[in-house]
Image 1: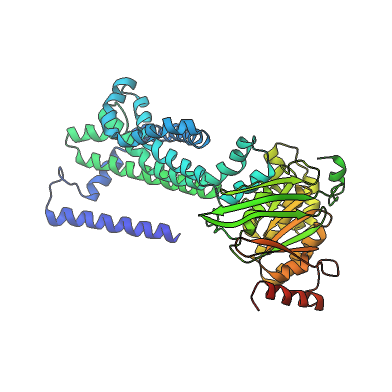
Image 2 (image 1 turned 90 degrees about the vertical axis):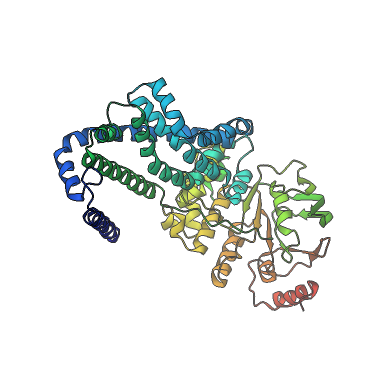
Length: 255
Length: 254
């Protein structure tokens, strides 16, 4: 409740600053429309905004799902097999080093103007944070738990140890990765839409921009921001519910 | 696990298993902590290994547990001449309860790791025995330190192994909780071959049927004369007090 109150105050403050800048700078509406003009545009174009937002939201969610699956799979392979680590780690780092902006036109070329290229963009942009965080968690299972498992089970039960101890222990780390993913996945989707698309909030913004409908651009931007913030809080709340426990503080070895 | 041991929750292993370690050697960072160390554990007896911090007690215990730390070697076998693998249960200073599992699932962790059928009824009986009957479905973080260590004790007993290795399992607890848990451990582990590593002389005197002292550098083992009485002994017992003074003299503290 207090968080909501704080959020609303911040929002009101931002709107006030916005209005002040417009009034004091005497800016024409085609450079910076005031909050009022944007609100009117938001209301008038509600139907079209909602439709485009739906497309973008679907791209983001599908990109999140597929990227998470791919990231978790990669992290498991990395954590399980030393040979794969040598081959996959450079790929993982390259996936982060190559700017997604640079690949976006290629993806559109290969996957077309439809949703596929946008989903792939969102996937690509979240692949690294998901994989890196989960892999990090898998590598740092508290050693005491592994000792216990080694005394309890024969050495050929590695998969069971991974499943019952290492993976659950790495879930909080995966959760941090998913929070970052939720924050950056919308960037991927909108980037894809900017490069070439026929629907979505990014498409709407480009379209409005070329026709000097700056108020509509802002309206689309607001919807996108709301979508991104909503996704983040949804993911955060879901993770907190699913993972109510915390890892113990790393223990010091005693003799 | 044979069905007979499932029917009687605290069944003593049919044949107590002695443990023998020969020529144990630990070099750590160029420093020889011990070399040519021999350790014999009498089958079915509660042995305490007492020594100051940093002497290598934990490393010795880990060697027995098959958790061979780097730089350590030695010939280890059971009294029957076979390796100890799969016949040892381990209890550490940390309770090592998995926070995402409830207490019951923690107690049955071993069978899950080995892909065996889980004997939940036996686990529940063991939990009742350590006084956690009402907490079977609770998460570990809802438990106090003493209760968590009780759950760890139940998990250790659930393994039903002839040899039980304990690394200062009670040292993180307050004095009263520690005394209660020591009594409980002495009662529930009777008949098994137990090695408890501790730096607390009173704990060793309270629990040990045999007491080994590890001291010096490179460290050597010496055996303390067996005390009268059956563990858990009363810490105020004159014989315990006299032995306590002797140990302190031996360790150079008094």
